[in-house]
Image (cartoon, rainbow, N blue to C red; front, side, top):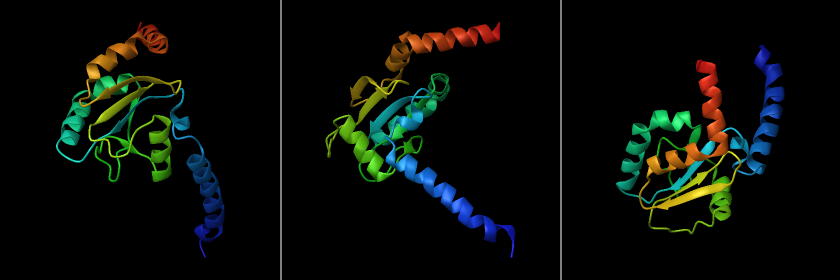
Length: 152
């Protein structure tokens, strides 16, 4: 017998409690005070490729602003760059933000670090507008100021 034989029940018990907490917690709780979010849903088709290309193009600016992308598309994940939640969490988020099933247009919701909705876009994702909006937020201004202090 090896150590895993004895450790397996402890590891499984620990992971089970962590998984149970993360599934039962509100979907955005894990990101609160750490990340801003773009919650997006994309219909099937070529628009997903355009969105992914925009996300890749703006990767540095996205990372600078602590943005995470949550893909709540119906069915399969559309954007590999986005985090995918479990089906129950996706349903909960769609309900939280009043997102209709079968929405034919892509939609994007900007969520602040406080967990509140800051802006919505339908159709196309205009990241530059959101970068400007984020940069005007008090928390982001403080982050920029702190970074400038560290660099000096």
